[in-house]
Length: 265
Ligand SMILES: Cc1cc2nc3c(=O)[nH]c(=O)nc-3n(C[C@H](O)[C@H](O)[C@H](O)COP(=O)(O)O)c2cc1C
Picture 1: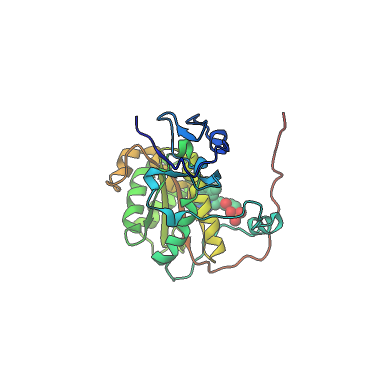
Picture 2 (picture 1 turned 90 degrees about the horizontal axis):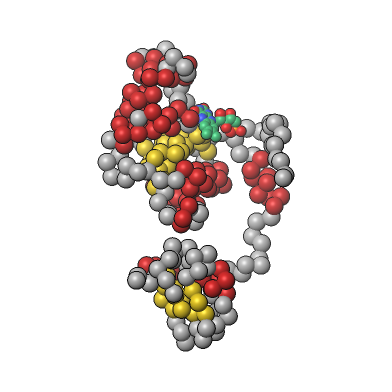
């Protein structure tokens, strides 16, 4: 049986907090905490709640620099501030020529690092398309063209690829020059992770928009799409495509939305 926790019996004061937060019933506390099974999925809740620092996840034993202690009662973000931030978010399609560098991308991916994932699988991964963006978009067109009678945007995309001298903007990328793709076995986990980096992007003065049509390539022909990404596990799907850059046009007001429908049962 592979144990995932390192428990320091001398530090443990048998407060049972770890046992209470373990959703896998993997810890029993008598004189001290003991890992009882092989059920642990390394969520780290036992470690994070322990006041005594008596528990460590073995696989992250040498990552203590990645653990930050904080005062859980201290509020660092007020509701009004966060809501105001969300209100001002807009899809950005018009970008400056300046490209985002890797240091800035790293800052964005930190948001995804702290993202929740189904079964704590942590299997979300990203691709940044930059130099190979045009090559990738050609593949996307090859796959999604089967739906060009249904979607005028796809037809326009084909016309643009054949001759881009008459069209003002790229019908799918607009002025975008960099694209973030999110892959995972679980759609919700991928979308949550991407949303976090999207929000961080706005906080760094960046912006972007999601692309429905790029995503269609995974829905229509996953196998063919994945030939472009030989290093990514084929069980993962591309669940988010986010074009990103430095905004050129700045919006000045919110617009009204349809009321959000909520039903309480
Ligand atoms: C899942 C999803 C797919 C989208 N696909 C596209 C797209 O293919 N092309 C595009 O220009 N905008 C796309 N958008 C952006 C929406 O058109 C945009 O959110 C909407 O017009 C409202 O504008 P706002 O985001 O500024 O509030 C997409 C948005 C989402 C959430």
